[in-house]
Image 1 (tube, rainbow, N blue to C red):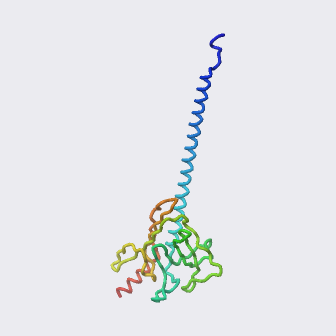
Image 2 (tube, rainbow, N blue to C red):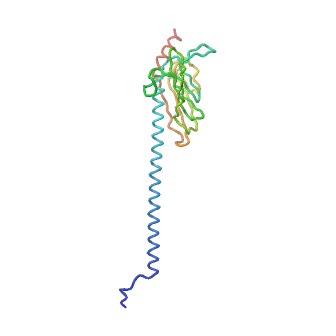
Image 3 (cartoon, helix red, strand yellow):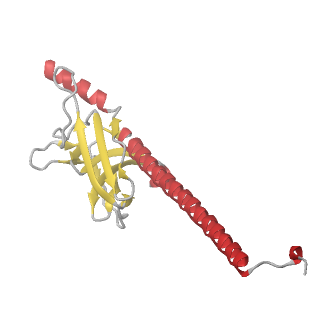
Length: 212
């Protein structure tokens, strides 16, 4: 029998099968790694988009703050126009129709069991209107790990104050608000510093009263 017509030996068949199995295993491992990389990229993109959209929303809402009264401090008789605390702030701003019925609404941004949330309440005549069926607070960040809110205004010599954990002048808007958020899914967010355009008029009036 001619040697050139002989079939494959068992060793050659086994070797070919081993090489084929190794090639398939490498191909599947490469495919799994590529799929995992794509999934991680998509997750990162979704987290980044979520961070960007929440920060944009907060920036628009805080920027829209108005020096409008929404209540009175019973102990001092001071009009409440901006209440700022380390993990909660309240102020009045107009909202677009898709968020409510339009017009001035109290914005209550706070940290609680549901994470970082915002609640709205209609304001008329310097008071919050009690609604028959108030809406539950809207969650902004559910997996929040920490939130720090800070505020600053002007000194008497028109220089910026240091950042304050509490805004002590509730009858005036601060010039700037700092919002620092850390969440379980996205870690520390980029710090957000927002200027309040309507606060300038408030401080100008206050400065005039002081130096008269």
